Length: 128
Image 1 (spheres, rainbow, N blue to C red):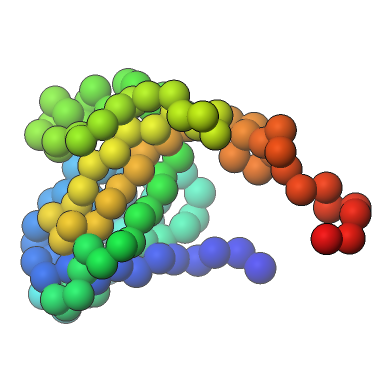
Image 2 (image 1 turned 180 degrees about the vertical axis):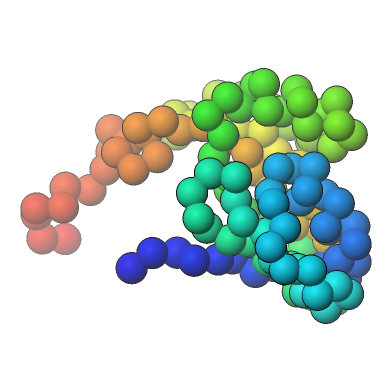
């Protein structure tokens, strides 16, 4: 099984469009004001926006960046406002946090091998 896409809801898709283009996602479908879809700059996962009023209700989206500090610096210069980071976390990830125009929490991070293989990983060979 492979994750294809994540869709979030936000009231203003034009604001979302601008935000996610600055973030580096590439548009593949523009059906605004109802829907927009983007492809992530690395890999083939897609990310979409659906128009609605229920955005920002606890959604957090993580995007991994190889050069996190450099990426955050570039995005800050482009006008995006981060609320924290980049900073090292106790779970061995380096993270920076911001919010999209719909109030959805966005985490840019770098985890390296700790993303799938942290020191506390559950042993796949033992029964739970």
